[in-house]
Length: 306
Image (cartoon, rainbow, N blue to C red; front, side, top):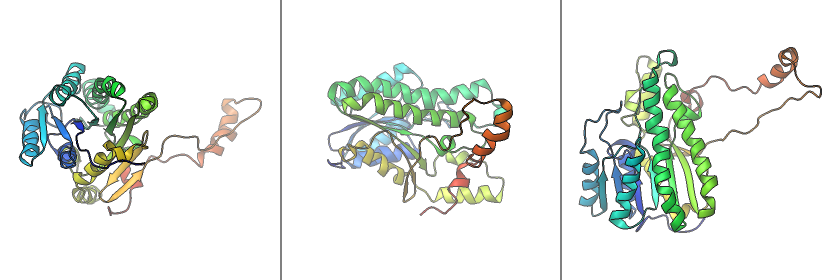
């Protein structure tokens, strides 16, 4: 891996950049020399548009600090909106070098109570939104022979979480989409990676706090800042990360983790084939020692943030 870790002259589109981690990423890449398209619909956590000027406020903050930025208020869930935000970058600076797919909403609820509308809305913003924006940028990346995608996934999808079937499904889908993009576009020198962020933001502020354990978890989250996640995103967009693609990272305060990807753990075979009876007697007992428990993220990351 060689090349500069700075982003001088690069044009980066950050979705959902009006606040939280997205804002931190936009400010960080701008400080590293990037020209930034700040996208934000101005939506509430549930997806209703409430603050249409949010993107412009962050773009102005970048310009006031001496950087270059323009705002965009289109929705990532709309393919036309995704095309428009990429077109804004091309029209303003003549190119696009990096995409940070960060935009998201939450519609939490236990699966047996979840409506189709709440499932559909979250999938559309997170998973379809990541596809739409990435797809809009892909031809430009291909033609110029370079580009980098950074997608925000979540341990809710990679590990599991209660009352987030829609969000978890979308976030695990993003990890698979990222890997497919990395495989399909490697011949064009285009990279695609994921980050599962641990940080206090609007998204995590919705966590229910009704037990001492949840209270302690939220206290830990409040210590973790989005700026720490933004540093990793900035690196992955830079030429210094030229050899890094198809990976899933987690960023938790000063810790960076390389997350696993599904591979076979153990196998059983029977020359004559299996029956339900032999599976019950032999197959499952032999495999069950390697089963994953029904864990949530907090069961896996059990130590305090460093």
